[in-house]
Length: 144
Image 1 (tube, rainbow, N blue to C red):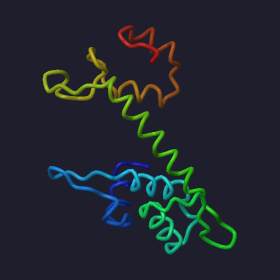
Image 2 (cartoon, one colour):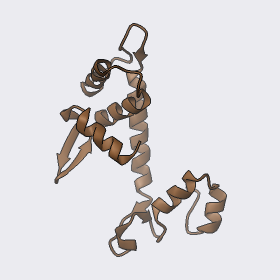
Image 3 (spheres, rainbow, N blue to C red):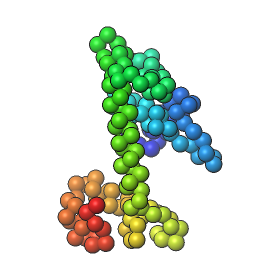
Protein backbone atom coordinates (compact mmCIF):
# COMPACT_ATOMS: atom_id res chain seq x y z
CA UNK A 1 0.00 0.00 0.00
CA UNK A 2 1.38 3.43 -0.89
CA UNK A 3 1.46 6.37 1.51
CA UNK A 4 -1.17 8.05 -0.64
CA UNK A 5 -3.47 5.00 -0.38
CA UNK A 6 -3.00 4.87 3.40
CA UNK A 7 -3.82 8.58 3.72
CA UNK A 8 -6.93 8.08 1.60
CA UNK A 9 -8.05 5.19 3.83
CA UNK A 10 -7.43 7.31 6.93
CA UNK A 11 -9.44 10.18 5.45
CA UNK A 12 -12.30 8.16 4.02
CA UNK A 13 -12.71 5.00 6.08
CA UNK A 14 -11.18 5.17 9.51
CA UNK A 15 -13.41 6.47 12.29
CA UNK A 16 -12.15 9.71 13.85
CA UNK A 17 -11.19 7.97 17.11
CA UNK A 18 -8.60 5.90 15.20
CA UNK A 19 -6.53 9.03 14.63
CA UNK A 20 -4.97 11.46 17.11
CA UNK A 21 -3.62 14.93 16.34
CA UNK A 22 -0.49 16.34 17.94
CA UNK A 23 1.38 19.46 16.95
CA UNK A 24 -0.50 19.80 13.68
CA UNK A 25 0.31 16.22 12.68
CA UNK A 26 -1.91 13.20 12.82
CA UNK A 27 -1.05 9.81 14.22
CA UNK A 28 -2.91 6.53 13.80
CA UNK A 29 -3.59 4.77 17.11
CA UNK A 30 -2.64 1.11 17.59
CA UNK A 31 -6.30 0.19 17.13
CA UNK A 32 -6.37 2.35 13.99
CA UNK A 33 -3.30 0.50 12.69
CA UNK A 34 -5.17 -2.78 13.31
CA UNK A 35 -8.04 -1.43 11.22
CA UNK A 36 -5.66 -0.46 8.40
CA UNK A 37 -3.97 -3.86 8.49
CA UNK A 38 -7.32 -5.67 8.44
CA UNK A 39 -8.49 -3.44 5.58
CA UNK A 40 -5.37 -4.24 3.55
CA UNK A 41 -5.48 -7.99 4.25
CA UNK A 42 -9.19 -8.30 3.54
CA UNK A 43 -9.45 -5.93 0.61
CA UNK A 44 -12.39 -6.95 -1.54
CA UNK A 45 -13.60 -9.63 0.89
CA UNK A 46 -15.75 -7.50 3.17
CA UNK A 47 -18.83 -5.47 2.52
CA UNK A 48 -18.76 -1.89 3.72
CA UNK A 49 -21.01 -2.82 6.65
CA UNK A 50 -18.83 -5.82 7.64
CA UNK A 51 -15.73 -3.62 7.46
CA UNK A 52 -17.40 -1.03 9.72
CA UNK A 53 -18.36 -3.75 12.22
CA UNK A 54 -14.78 -5.00 12.26
CA UNK A 55 -13.43 -1.47 12.75
CA UNK A 56 -15.88 -0.84 15.61
CA UNK A 57 -14.78 -4.07 17.29
CA UNK A 58 -11.07 -3.28 16.91
CA UNK A 59 -11.50 0.33 18.04
CA UNK A 60 -13.87 -0.45 20.87
CA UNK A 61 -11.35 -2.61 22.63
CA UNK A 62 -13.61 -5.62 22.26
CA UNK A 63 -11.54 -8.40 23.78
CA UNK A 64 -13.35 -11.15 21.91
CA UNK A 65 -10.86 -13.36 20.12
CA UNK A 66 -13.10 -13.89 17.14
CA UNK A 67 -15.66 -11.74 15.39
CA UNK A 68 -18.31 -13.32 13.17
CA UNK A 69 -18.81 -10.91 10.29
CA UNK A 70 -21.07 -13.14 8.22
CA UNK A 71 -22.44 -16.64 8.52
CA UNK A 72 -19.31 -17.99 6.86
CA UNK A 73 -16.63 -15.44 7.73
CA UNK A 74 -15.08 -15.11 11.17
CA UNK A 75 -12.10 -12.87 11.84
CA UNK A 76 -9.49 -13.58 14.49
CA UNK A 77 -9.38 -10.06 15.94
CA UNK A 78 -6.95 -11.10 18.69
CA UNK A 79 -4.45 -12.18 16.02
CA UNK A 80 -4.78 -8.80 14.32
CA UNK A 81 -4.06 -7.02 17.61
CA UNK A 82 -1.08 -9.30 18.34
CA UNK A 83 0.39 -8.67 14.88
CA UNK A 84 0.03 -4.89 15.21
CA UNK A 85 1.62 -4.99 18.68
CA UNK A 86 4.51 -7.13 17.37
CA UNK A 87 5.11 -4.86 14.39
CA UNK A 88 4.98 -1.78 16.62
CA UNK A 89 7.61 -3.26 18.94
CA UNK A 90 9.80 -4.13 15.96
CA UNK A 91 9.43 -0.62 14.53
CA UNK A 92 10.34 0.90 17.89
CA UNK A 93 13.45 -1.29 18.05
CA UNK A 94 14.45 -0.49 14.46
CA UNK A 95 14.16 3.25 15.09
CA UNK A 96 17.15 3.00 17.42
CA UNK A 97 19.28 2.27 14.33
CA UNK A 98 18.16 5.40 12.46
CA UNK A 99 18.89 9.08 12.93
CA UNK A 100 17.92 12.19 11.04
CA UNK A 101 20.22 15.20 11.31
CA UNK A 102 19.69 18.35 9.21
CA UNK A 103 23.49 18.58 8.82
CA UNK A 104 23.76 15.06 7.37
CA UNK A 105 22.39 14.55 3.86
CA UNK A 106 19.85 17.32 4.40
CA UNK A 107 18.12 15.47 7.22
CA UNK A 108 17.40 12.30 5.25
CA UNK A 109 17.09 9.30 7.64
CA UNK A 110 20.43 7.50 7.81
CA UNK A 111 21.75 4.55 9.75
CA UNK A 112 23.06 5.84 13.06
CA UNK A 113 26.70 6.88 12.89
CA UNK A 114 26.85 6.68 9.08
CA UNK A 115 25.91 8.71 6.03
CA UNK A 116 24.09 5.72 4.51
CA UNK A 117 20.46 6.61 3.70
CA UNK A 118 17.92 4.11 4.99
CA UNK A 119 15.87 4.50 1.79
CA UNK A 120 18.84 3.44 -0.33
CA UNK A 121 19.29 0.18 1.58
CA UNK A 122 15.54 -0.43 1.63
CA UNK A 123 15.47 -0.04 -2.15
CA UNK A 124 18.34 -2.50 -2.58
CA UNK A 125 16.60 -5.01 -0.30
CA UNK A 126 13.39 -4.59 -2.31
CA UNK A 127 15.44 -5.54 -5.39
CA UNK A 128 16.42 -8.79 -3.60
CA UNK A 129 20.01 -7.77 -2.95
CA UNK A 130 21.57 -10.33 -0.61
CA UNK A 131 22.54 -9.20 2.90
CA UNK A 132 26.12 -10.43 2.45
CA UNK A 133 26.48 -8.28 -0.67
CA UNK A 134 25.16 -5.22 1.20
CA UNK A 135 27.58 -5.82 4.07
CA UNK A 136 30.45 -6.07 1.59
CA UNK A 137 29.41 -2.86 -0.19
CA UNK A 138 28.61 -0.99 3.04
CA UNK A 139 31.12 -2.11 5.71
CA UNK A 140 29.77 0.46 8.20
CA UNK A 141 26.55 -1.59 8.43
CA UNK A 142 26.12 -4.64 10.61
CA UNK A 143 23.92 -7.65 9.96
CA UNK A 144 21.56 -6.44 12.65
